Amino acid sequence: MIKHIVMWKLKDEAHGNNKATNAGLVKEKLEALSGKIDGLLKIEVGIDFLGGGNFDVVLYSELSSKEALDTYQNHPLHQAVLPFIREAVMDRKAVDYEG
Image 1: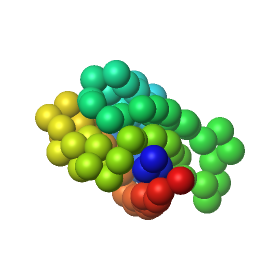
Image 2 (image 1 turned 120 degrees about the horizontal axis):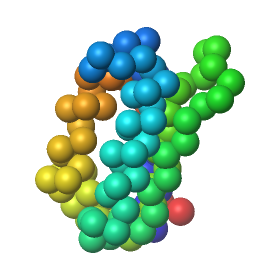
Image 3 (image 1 turned 180 degrees about the vertical axis):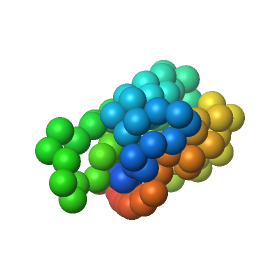
């Protein structure tokens, strides 16, 4: 199994929305992919509640294989979400591992 984790620090404003609104929209858009991409076993998006130096949003996902990760990353439904996220983000960190 592959674990794919991404953390984002959001801009204070993007898409005409504040950070909190965009965090909710990122969560909504990514969690809408659940059950729609082969090999994507679990997808969960969390929004930080402490603030400060923390990242604002985290994605935790489980995929059946490295091939499934590639399928997920290149899937049209995932690709459709990326422009929104990229515009709202000022920093991104990610890790992919087997576990």
